[in-house]
Length: 283
Length: 177
Image (cartoon, rainbow over all chains, first blue to last red; front, top):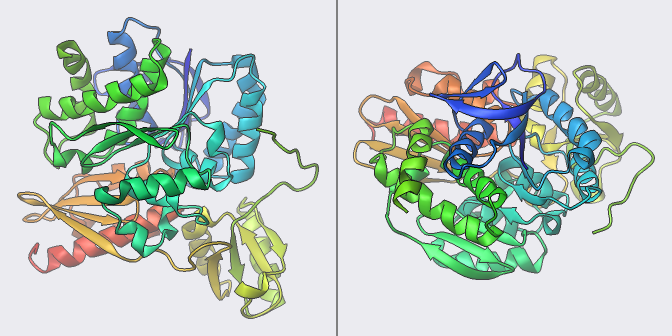
Protein backbone atom coordinates (compact mmCIF):
# COMPACT_ATOMS: atom_id res chain seq x y z
CA UNK A 1 0.00 0.00 0.00
CA UNK A 2 1.16 3.50 -0.89
CA UNK A 3 0.42 6.07 1.82
CA UNK A 4 0.82 9.78 1.07
CA UNK A 5 0.80 12.28 3.93
CA UNK A 6 0.82 16.05 3.75
CA UNK A 7 -0.98 19.35 4.11
CA UNK A 8 -3.23 21.02 1.56
CA UNK A 9 -4.34 24.64 1.13
CA UNK A 10 -7.82 24.34 2.62
CA UNK A 11 -7.96 25.87 6.06
CA UNK A 12 -11.37 24.32 6.77
CA UNK A 13 -10.14 20.78 6.15
CA UNK A 14 -9.75 18.61 9.24
CA UNK A 15 -7.48 15.61 9.11
CA UNK A 16 -8.92 13.14 6.63
CA UNK A 17 -7.78 9.73 5.46
CA UNK A 18 -8.86 7.33 2.79
CA UNK A 19 -8.46 6.41 -0.83
CA UNK A 20 -7.68 9.23 -3.25
CA UNK A 21 -8.83 9.54 -6.83
CA UNK A 22 -8.54 12.24 -9.45
CA UNK A 23 -11.67 13.53 -11.15
CA UNK A 24 -11.05 16.27 -13.66
CA UNK A 25 -8.96 18.94 -11.98
CA UNK A 26 -9.88 17.84 -8.47
CA UNK A 27 -8.56 15.28 -6.10
CA UNK A 28 -11.34 13.40 -4.34
CA UNK A 29 -11.06 11.79 -0.92
CA UNK A 30 -14.54 10.49 -0.18
CA UNK A 31 -16.72 13.43 -1.16
CA UNK A 32 -14.11 16.05 -0.30
CA UNK A 33 -12.69 17.94 -3.27
CA UNK A 34 -9.18 19.35 -3.27
CA UNK A 35 -7.86 21.29 -6.28
CA UNK A 36 -4.85 19.85 -8.08
CA UNK A 37 -2.31 22.55 -7.34
CA UNK A 38 1.31 22.76 -6.27
CA UNK A 39 2.15 20.62 -3.23
CA UNK A 40 0.74 17.41 -1.82
CA UNK A 41 -2.36 17.69 -4.03
CA UNK A 42 -0.17 17.60 -7.15
CA UNK A 43 1.91 14.75 -5.74
CA UNK A 44 -1.19 12.72 -4.92
CA UNK A 45 -2.77 13.47 -8.29
CA UNK A 46 0.32 12.18 -10.09
CA UNK A 47 0.32 9.05 -7.92
CA UNK A 48 -3.38 8.51 -8.69
CA UNK A 49 -3.01 8.63 -12.47
CA UNK A 50 0.14 6.49 -12.36
CA UNK A 51 -1.47 3.83 -10.14
CA UNK A 52 -4.52 3.81 -12.36
CA UNK A 53 -2.38 3.38 -15.48
CA UNK A 54 -0.54 0.50 -13.79
CA UNK A 55 -3.89 -1.03 -12.73
CA UNK A 56 -2.89 -0.83 -9.08
CA UNK A 57 -4.99 0.22 -6.10
CA UNK A 58 -5.30 3.99 -5.68
CA UNK A 59 -3.01 5.61 -3.10
CA UNK A 60 -4.20 6.02 0.46
CA UNK A 61 -3.79 9.52 1.86
CA UNK A 62 -3.72 11.35 5.15
CA UNK A 63 -4.32 15.03 4.43
CA UNK A 64 -5.04 18.07 6.55
CA UNK A 65 -5.53 21.78 5.91
CA UNK A 66 -2.69 24.07 7.00
CA UNK A 67 -1.98 27.65 5.97
CA UNK A 68 1.55 27.57 7.36
CA UNK A 69 0.61 28.24 10.98
CA UNK A 70 1.48 24.62 11.68
CA UNK A 71 -1.81 23.68 13.35
CA UNK A 72 -2.76 21.11 10.72
CA UNK A 73 0.81 19.84 10.53
CA UNK A 74 0.79 19.01 14.22
CA UNK A 75 -2.41 16.97 13.82
CA UNK A 76 -0.71 15.11 10.99
CA UNK A 77 2.42 14.39 13.01
CA UNK A 78 0.30 13.14 15.92
CA UNK A 79 -1.75 10.91 13.63
CA UNK A 80 1.35 9.35 12.09
CA UNK A 81 3.05 8.83 15.46
CA UNK A 82 -0.03 7.06 16.80
CA UNK A 83 -1.08 5.07 13.75
CA UNK A 84 1.74 4.39 11.32
CA UNK A 85 2.90 1.11 12.85
CA UNK A 86 -0.71 -0.17 12.72
CA UNK A 87 -1.19 0.93 9.10
CA UNK A 88 2.24 -0.40 8.13
CA UNK A 89 2.25 0.85 4.52
CA UNK A 90 4.66 -0.60 1.95
CA UNK A 91 5.58 2.89 0.77
CA UNK A 92 5.31 6.04 2.89
CA UNK A 93 5.58 9.47 1.27
CA UNK A 94 5.79 12.42 3.66
CA UNK A 95 5.43 15.75 1.94
CA UNK A 96 4.28 19.32 2.81
CA UNK A 97 4.35 19.66 6.57
CA UNK A 98 5.75 22.26 8.94
CA UNK A 99 9.27 21.02 9.66
CA UNK A 100 9.49 20.15 13.37
CA UNK A 101 12.56 18.10 14.20
CA UNK A 102 11.31 16.51 17.41
CA UNK A 103 8.06 15.37 15.82
CA UNK A 104 9.79 14.02 12.72
CA UNK A 105 12.00 11.92 15.00
CA UNK A 106 8.89 10.46 16.61
CA UNK A 107 7.34 9.71 13.20
CA UNK A 108 10.48 7.84 12.16
CA UNK A 109 10.54 5.94 15.45
CA UNK A 110 6.93 4.92 14.83
CA UNK A 111 7.73 3.89 11.23
CA UNK A 112 10.63 1.79 12.51
CA UNK A 113 8.08 -0.15 14.57
CA UNK A 114 6.09 -1.22 11.47
CA UNK A 115 6.01 -4.98 10.83
CA UNK A 116 8.16 -4.22 7.78
CA UNK A 117 9.87 -0.86 7.46
CA UNK A 118 8.12 1.10 4.65
CA UNK A 119 10.04 2.49 1.72
CA UNK A 120 10.42 6.02 3.06
CA UNK A 121 10.21 8.97 0.65
CA UNK A 122 10.59 12.60 1.73
CA UNK A 123 10.15 15.62 -0.48
CA UNK A 124 9.72 19.34 0.25
CA UNK A 125 9.62 20.34 3.92
CA UNK A 126 9.58 16.78 5.24
CA UNK A 127 13.01 16.44 3.61
CA UNK A 128 14.09 19.65 5.38
CA UNK A 129 12.92 18.22 8.71
CA UNK A 130 14.60 14.86 8.08
CA UNK A 131 17.92 16.53 7.26
CA UNK A 132 17.75 19.00 10.15
CA UNK A 133 16.91 16.21 12.59
CA UNK A 134 19.78 14.09 11.20
CA UNK A 135 17.37 11.38 10.06
CA UNK A 136 18.39 11.27 6.40
CA UNK A 137 19.80 7.75 6.65
CA UNK A 138 16.39 6.48 7.71
CA UNK A 139 14.94 7.56 4.36
CA UNK A 140 15.19 5.68 1.08
CA UNK A 141 14.55 8.60 -1.28
CA UNK A 142 14.94 12.38 -1.17
CA UNK A 143 13.95 14.45 -4.21
CA UNK A 144 15.82 17.79 -3.99
CA UNK A 145 16.21 20.41 -6.69
CA UNK A 146 19.63 22.00 -7.09
CA UNK A 147 19.08 24.59 -4.34
CA UNK A 148 17.83 21.90 -1.98
CA UNK A 149 20.85 19.80 -2.93
CA UNK A 150 23.03 22.72 -1.78
CA UNK A 151 21.01 22.69 1.45
CA UNK A 152 21.74 18.98 1.97
CA UNK A 153 25.42 19.71 1.33
CA UNK A 154 25.58 22.60 3.80
CA UNK A 155 26.44 20.98 7.13
CA UNK A 156 24.67 23.19 9.65
CA UNK A 157 21.68 24.84 8.03
CA UNK A 158 18.17 23.71 8.86
CA UNK A 159 16.37 25.29 5.91
CA UNK A 160 17.39 26.29 2.35
CA UNK A 161 16.76 29.95 3.26
CA UNK A 162 20.06 29.95 5.14
CA UNK A 163 22.39 28.18 2.72
CA UNK A 164 25.78 29.71 2.00
CA UNK A 165 26.03 32.07 -0.96
CA UNK A 166 28.67 29.97 -2.68
CA UNK A 167 26.46 26.90 -2.48
CA UNK A 168 23.44 28.79 -3.84
CA UNK A 169 25.60 29.72 -6.82
CA UNK A 170 26.50 26.08 -7.41
CA UNK A 171 25.44 25.06 -10.88
CA UNK A 172 24.78 21.69 -12.37
CA UNK A 173 28.50 21.25 -13.15
CA UNK A 174 29.19 21.19 -9.42
CA UNK A 175 26.52 18.64 -8.59
CA UNK A 176 29.05 15.88 -7.85
CA UNK A 177 30.69 18.13 -5.25
CA UNK A 178 27.32 18.71 -3.57
CA UNK A 179 26.47 15.00 -3.67
CA UNK A 180 29.80 14.03 -2.08
CA UNK A 181 29.39 16.62 0.68
CA UNK A 182 25.81 15.53 1.45
CA UNK A 183 26.72 11.83 1.70
CA UNK A 184 29.89 12.55 3.69
CA UNK A 185 27.91 14.29 6.42
CA UNK A 186 25.05 11.78 6.29
CA UNK A 187 22.52 14.33 5.06
CA UNK A 188 21.38 12.29 2.05
CA UNK A 189 18.91 9.44 1.71
CA UNK A 190 20.03 6.22 0.03
CA UNK A 191 18.70 7.53 -3.28
CA UNK A 192 18.64 11.14 -4.36
CA UNK A 193 16.62 12.32 -7.32
CA UNK A 194 18.11 15.71 -8.15
CA UNK A 195 15.76 17.73 -10.33
CA UNK A 196 17.11 20.34 -12.69
CA UNK A 197 18.17 21.12 -16.25
CA UNK A 198 19.76 17.68 -16.01
CA UNK A 199 18.04 15.27 -13.64
CA UNK A 200 20.37 13.01 -11.66
CA UNK A 201 19.53 9.74 -9.95
CA UNK A 202 22.10 8.97 -7.27
CA UNK A 203 22.45 5.77 -5.25
CA UNK A 204 24.70 5.72 -2.18
CA UNK A 205 26.68 8.67 -3.50
CA UNK A 206 27.13 7.39 -7.05
CA UNK A 207 25.37 8.96 -10.02
CA UNK A 208 23.68 6.04 -11.76
CA UNK A 209 21.51 7.90 -14.26
CA UNK A 210 21.23 11.34 -15.84
CA UNK A 211 18.76 12.77 -18.32
CA UNK A 212 18.66 16.13 -20.09
CA UNK A 213 16.31 15.43 -22.98
CA UNK A 214 13.75 16.39 -23.93
CA UNK A 215 14.99 19.76 -22.72
CA UNK A 216 11.97 21.66 -21.36
CA UNK A 217 13.29 24.69 -19.41
CA UNK A 218 9.73 25.83 -18.59
CA UNK A 219 9.23 22.81 -16.31
CA UNK A 220 11.32 24.54 -13.64
CA UNK A 221 8.88 27.43 -13.54
CA UNK A 222 5.75 25.30 -13.22
CA UNK A 223 4.70 24.87 -9.61
CA UNK A 224 4.35 21.17 -8.81
CA UNK A 225 6.67 19.51 -11.33
CA UNK A 226 8.85 18.21 -8.50
CA UNK A 227 5.77 16.98 -6.67
CA UNK A 228 4.63 14.97 -9.67
CA UNK A 229 8.01 13.20 -9.78
CA UNK A 230 7.71 12.20 -6.11
CA UNK A 231 4.14 11.00 -6.62
CA UNK A 232 5.08 8.87 -9.60
CA UNK A 233 8.04 7.38 -7.72
CA UNK A 234 5.74 6.30 -4.90
CA UNK A 235 3.28 4.68 -7.32
CA UNK A 236 6.00 2.92 -9.31
CA UNK A 237 7.57 1.44 -6.17
CA UNK A 238 4.15 0.32 -4.99
CA UNK A 239 3.75 -1.48 -8.33
CA UNK A 240 6.96 -3.45 -7.78
CA UNK A 241 9.79 -1.39 -9.25
CA UNK A 242 12.93 -0.90 -7.19
CA UNK A 243 13.54 2.57 -5.83
CA UNK A 244 16.11 3.51 -8.44
CA UNK A 245 14.06 2.03 -11.31
CA UNK A 246 11.08 4.06 -10.10
CA UNK A 247 13.16 7.22 -9.91
CA UNK A 248 14.48 6.80 -13.45
CA UNK A 249 11.02 6.08 -14.84
CA UNK A 250 9.57 9.13 -13.06
CA UNK A 251 12.12 11.67 -14.31
CA UNK A 252 11.78 10.33 -17.86
CA UNK A 253 7.99 10.50 -17.70
CA UNK A 254 7.92 14.01 -16.24
CA UNK A 255 10.03 15.41 -19.08
CA UNK A 256 7.94 13.66 -21.70
CA UNK A 257 4.75 14.94 -20.11
CA UNK A 258 6.20 18.47 -20.34
CA UNK A 259 6.98 17.88 -23.99
CA UNK A 260 3.53 16.42 -24.63
CA UNK A 261 1.71 19.50 -23.31
CA UNK A 262 4.23 21.86 -24.97
CA UNK A 263 4.92 23.35 -21.57
CA UNK A 264 5.36 27.09 -21.19
CA UNK A 265 6.03 29.08 -18.01
CA UNK A 266 2.25 29.59 -17.75
CA UNK A 267 1.34 25.88 -17.92
CA UNK A 268 -0.49 24.62 -14.84
CA UNK A 269 0.46 21.43 -13.04
CA UNK A 270 -2.93 19.83 -13.68
CA UNK A 271 -2.03 19.82 -17.40
CA UNK A 272 1.19 17.92 -16.68
CA UNK A 273 -0.69 15.43 -14.48
CA UNK A 274 -3.26 14.85 -17.21
CA UNK A 275 -0.47 14.07 -19.67
CA UNK A 276 1.21 11.41 -17.48
CA UNK A 277 -0.94 8.43 -18.61
CA UNK A 278 -0.59 9.42 -22.26
CA UNK A 279 3.16 9.66 -21.80
CA UNK A 280 3.37 6.30 -20.04
CA UNK A 281 1.40 4.80 -22.88
CA UNK A 282 4.09 5.85 -25.31
CA UNK A 283 7.00 4.50 -23.22
CA UNK B 1 19.04 3.63 13.59
CA UNK B 2 18.25 4.09 17.27
CA UNK B 3 15.64 6.63 18.25
CA UNK B 4 15.98 8.23 21.68
CA UNK B 5 12.94 8.99 23.78
CA UNK B 6 13.00 12.14 25.88
CA UNK B 7 10.76 12.09 28.93
CA UNK B 8 10.63 15.83 29.50
CA UNK B 9 9.92 18.82 27.21
CA UNK B 10 11.07 17.44 23.86
CA UNK B 11 10.80 20.74 22.01
CA UNK B 12 13.94 21.23 19.97
CA UNK B 13 14.01 24.72 18.57
CA UNK B 14 16.67 25.80 16.16
CA UNK B 15 16.25 29.54 16.38
CA UNK B 16 16.37 32.29 18.96
CA UNK B 17 14.55 35.55 19.50
CA UNK B 18 16.95 37.95 21.25
CA UNK B 19 15.87 40.84 23.48
CA UNK B 20 17.24 43.95 25.19
CA UNK B 21 15.75 43.01 28.56
CA UNK B 22 14.60 39.98 30.49
CA UNK B 23 11.13 41.51 30.84
CA UNK B 24 10.79 41.72 27.04
CA UNK B 25 11.77 38.06 26.72
CA UNK B 26 9.20 36.94 29.29
CA UNK B 27 6.48 39.04 27.66
CA UNK B 28 7.26 37.67 24.18
CA UNK B 29 7.25 34.08 25.42
CA UNK B 30 3.79 34.65 26.90
CA UNK B 31 2.44 36.08 23.63
CA UNK B 32 3.90 33.29 21.52
CA UNK B 33 2.54 30.59 23.84
CA UNK B 34 -0.86 32.27 23.80
CA UNK B 35 -0.84 31.89 20.01
CA UNK B 36 0.17 28.22 20.32
CA UNK B 37 3.76 28.55 19.21
CA UNK B 38 5.98 25.96 20.80
CA UNK B 39 8.74 27.97 22.49
CA UNK B 40 10.84 28.01 25.61
CA UNK B 41 12.95 30.50 27.55
CA UNK B 42 16.66 29.76 27.30
CA UNK B 43 20.02 31.39 27.89
CA UNK B 44 21.48 32.26 24.48
CA UNK B 45 24.88 30.71 23.69
CA UNK B 46 27.76 33.21 24.12
CA UNK B 47 28.41 33.52 20.36
CA UNK B 48 24.82 34.71 19.73
CA UNK B 49 24.35 36.78 22.89
CA UNK B 50 23.18 40.33 22.25
CA UNK B 51 21.18 42.35 24.73
CA UNK B 52 20.03 40.43 27.80
CA UNK B 53 20.84 36.93 29.07
CA UNK B 54 17.44 35.48 28.25
CA UNK B 55 16.12 34.48 24.83
CA UNK B 56 13.11 32.63 23.45
CA UNK B 57 13.90 29.46 21.56
CA UNK B 58 11.64 28.93 18.54
CA UNK B 59 11.32 26.72 15.49
CA UNK B 60 13.27 28.97 13.11
CA UNK B 61 11.15 27.83 10.17
CA UNK B 62 8.32 29.84 11.77
CA UNK B 63 10.37 33.08 11.65
CA UNK B 64 7.90 34.99 9.47
CA UNK B 65 4.89 34.22 11.67
CA UNK B 66 6.77 34.86 14.92
CA UNK B 67 8.17 38.16 13.68
CA UNK B 68 4.77 39.38 12.45
CA UNK B 69 2.97 38.39 15.67
CA UNK B 70 5.51 40.14 17.90
CA UNK B 71 5.32 43.27 15.74
CA UNK B 72 1.50 43.23 15.78
CA UNK B 73 1.56 42.95 19.57
CA UNK B 74 4.19 45.70 19.77
CA UNK B 75 6.49 43.32 21.62
CA UNK B 76 10.03 44.61 21.43
CA UNK B 77 12.81 42.25 20.32
CA UNK B 78 16.30 42.62 18.92
CA UNK B 79 16.67 39.93 16.32
CA UNK B 80 15.64 36.44 15.25
CA UNK B 81 18.54 34.13 14.44
CA UNK B 82 19.12 30.46 13.67
CA UNK B 83 21.15 28.60 16.29
CA UNK B 84 23.51 27.17 13.69
CA UNK B 85 24.86 28.10 10.28
CA UNK B 86 24.60 31.50 8.61
CA UNK B 87 22.87 34.20 10.64
CA UNK B 88 21.42 36.06 7.67
CA UNK B 89 18.79 34.86 5.24
CA UNK B 90 20.00 34.26 1.71
CA UNK B 91 19.41 37.58 -0.02
CA UNK B 92 20.76 37.00 -3.51
CA UNK B 93 18.58 36.12 -6.47
CA UNK B 94 19.03 34.51 -9.86
CA UNK B 95 17.09 35.51 -12.97
CA UNK B 96 16.10 33.20 -15.81
CA UNK B 97 14.60 34.58 -19.00
CA UNK B 98 11.93 32.97 -21.14
CA UNK B 99 10.41 34.54 -24.25
CA UNK B 100 7.85 36.83 -22.57
CA UNK B 101 8.36 35.64 -19.04
CA UNK B 102 10.92 36.11 -16.33
CA UNK B 103 11.66 33.69 -13.49
CA UNK B 104 13.19 35.04 -10.29
CA UNK B 105 14.80 32.50 -7.97
CA UNK B 106 15.44 33.31 -4.31
CA UNK B 107 16.77 30.35 -2.39
CA UNK B 108 14.38 27.45 -2.86
CA UNK B 109 11.54 29.63 -4.24
CA UNK B 110 10.85 30.67 -7.82
CA UNK B 111 8.31 33.19 -9.08
CA UNK B 112 7.62 33.58 -12.80
CA UNK B 113 5.76 36.54 -14.25
CA UNK B 114 4.77 37.91 -17.64
CA UNK B 115 7.17 40.75 -18.49
CA UNK B 116 4.52 42.68 -20.40
CA UNK B 117 1.54 42.44 -18.08
CA UNK B 118 3.11 41.69 -14.68
CA UNK B 119 0.78 38.71 -14.23
CA UNK B 120 2.18 35.98 -11.98
CA UNK B 121 2.26 32.88 -14.18
CA UNK B 122 3.63 30.34 -11.72
CA UNK B 123 5.23 29.87 -8.31
CA UNK B 124 7.41 26.82 -7.82
CA UNK B 125 9.82 25.31 -5.32
CA UNK B 126 9.64 25.44 -1.56
CA UNK B 127 7.98 23.00 0.75
CA UNK B 128 6.43 24.67 3.78
CA UNK B 129 2.63 24.51 4.15
CA UNK B 130 1.99 28.21 3.46
CA UNK B 131 3.38 27.96 -0.07
CA UNK B 132 0.35 26.21 -1.64
CA UNK B 133 -1.86 28.86 0.03
CA UNK B 134 0.24 31.73 -1.29
CA UNK B 135 0.37 30.02 -4.69
CA UNK B 136 -3.42 29.94 -4.95
CA UNK B 137 -3.81 33.52 -3.70
CA UNK B 138 -1.24 35.00 -6.11
CA UNK B 139 -1.53 32.92 -9.27
CA UNK B 140 -2.83 34.69 -12.41
CA UNK B 141 -2.91 38.05 -10.61
CA UNK B 142 -0.74 41.08 -11.27
CA UNK B 143 2.35 41.66 -9.18
CA UNK B 144 1.01 45.11 -8.38
CA UNK B 145 -2.33 43.80 -7.11
CA UNK B 146 -1.35 41.16 -4.56
CA UNK B 147 -0.09 41.35 -0.98
CA UNK B 148 3.54 40.65 -0.28
CA UNK B 149 4.06 37.00 0.71
CA UNK B 150 5.58 38.00 4.05
CA UNK B 151 2.26 39.59 5.04
CA UNK B 152 0.36 36.32 4.84
CA UNK B 153 3.02 33.62 5.12
CA UNK B 154 4.42 32.06 8.28
CA UNK B 155 7.62 30.31 7.26
CA UNK B 156 11.10 30.74 5.84
CA UNK B 157 9.78 29.57 2.46
CA UNK B 158 7.37 32.53 2.54
CA UNK B 159 10.27 34.88 3.25
CA UNK B 160 12.19 33.46 0.28
CA UNK B 161 9.09 33.88 -1.89
CA UNK B 162 8.84 37.46 -0.60
CA UNK B 163 12.43 38.09 -1.70
CA UNK B 164 11.65 36.74 -5.19
CA UNK B 165 8.44 38.79 -5.29
CA UNK B 166 10.26 42.03 -4.37
CA UNK B 167 12.81 41.45 -7.11
CA UNK B 168 10.10 40.61 -9.65
CA UNK B 169 8.23 43.80 -8.78
CA UNK B 170 11.43 45.79 -9.21
CA UNK B 171 12.09 44.22 -12.63
CA UNK B 172 8.50 44.83 -13.74
CA UNK B 173 8.61 48.45 -12.59
CA UNK B 174 11.66 48.94 -14.83
CA UNK B 175 9.64 47.77 -17.82
CA UNK B 176 10.36 44.07 -17.47
CA UNK B 177 14.08 44.25 -18.13
